[in-house]
Length: 611
Image 1 (cartoon, helix red, strand yellow):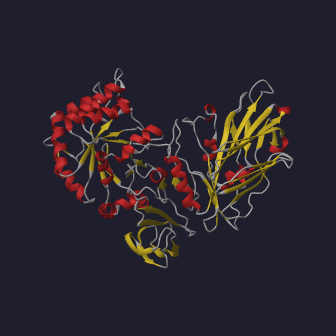
Image 2: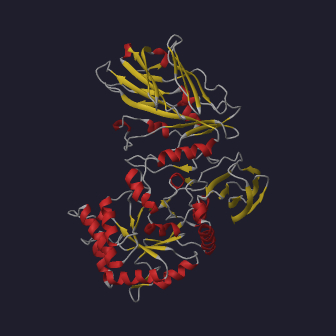
Image 3: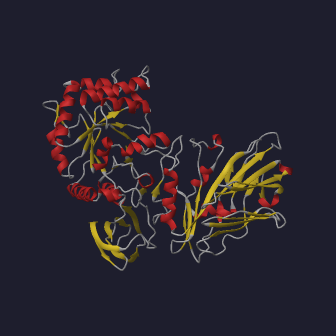
């Protein structure tokens, strides 16, 4: 596990637990090999470090003069730095290759532009090593950032985080494995910037993370932003794999989790939300909840309606928009203006509590008054909890909330759940916003999985699709089941009635029973999305109980005929029992694994118990 620098042969060799990396700089800089030590076969031979394109010309790393080579090491790290120049273009580079002495090699590119024409020029980078990355086996199976598997139409199945101006660090690696999904490589592109504006970011790894096809990877040219200082433009880390995609995803999640404190999720007073399977969103002035004769909240009617779905565990009572904005009343005034005021809402909340149902109220951030500070808004929210004894807030349009508001709510009632409409993106919001919607409006969501559900399984996100009609509602329900998630029922969309059919209600009821029975398996901390099957149109997610003695495999058949998987081998433990627990199809134990048959366009869940 050491670095060897041979100045005479102009070569550097690194080895760690997973990789053997050779660098040759006799005739320009290139990788002489990047090989997986588990596979023990040379791979990725003679690959250029980079190509640059600028002012209508293309330059290879071999076109750069090597000005110096510097080697540095300590007890934890080994690093070699190559100082390169393309003097006639006034372009300079520093290439750092770093060995963590454990399992990863990091390659960091820094490029400087001394402004040949007096202004910075457009520079694009291509990395031949990545474009042609191979596992070293007989046949390669490729998984790409944000797009490890596509459906029959070439659409990405794993849906990335929805960014706007701020970026996320929930990113998938590039993974290349041999056909048996064992030996290969995982490549990560860390994105330290919180901004999606590439021009403002010194690190443009985001562009590599957005590559979504093999063709795009092979042909990529990423615009970098060098100026008259050395900016960190591109960085990637590579690890050798012995257990394919499952190992890569677990490594990726573990590395991501290391940056976070999830103690908020472990608070006993917030655990109640993870024990809910069916949620409901109610427009307060609709006939679904309001008795228009008595102008009171009809709790019994809501409870009765919920029985067809298996019982509502929470209700969100929405009382403002679209009425909000027609006059000067604020969202807080609407709590007072409901017939009977806040006391009437309190009586309804008390009755919901008697029925075992928690209540969430909405927060509308875009209605904040001109002179209303974050502190004022927090005081108003705390007062609403005091007045109504509600159990949480649905944070409309939000991904975040000032933490000072969380502290104010803790003082008046511990256990208040904060639920954002969109997944929180980074750091502190992810740490204390413990739930959000997994919302879909107009997408065609099968087959599809939510990346955040698998990267942060502590974060329970009910699936909801507000405008779905009959056929689309079925797809949303299957998406919920395939992803092992709870569901939110929203039928009165501010006055437009979008009901579920009796058959759909019955299916949700069945799903709730399964989800709640095996909740500890579905909510285990190490799920794996899209386990490779090498079976056309058949997809599989895996959920694992934290004790390790049970797993659930959820299958989806995206074809018009029954699909069979004659043998699915398991290497996580010795199989004791295999049982179908949900869906359409069959499953039976076969050796140390199982065989399944899945009906057309349907879901099948298989429980595996280990000895």
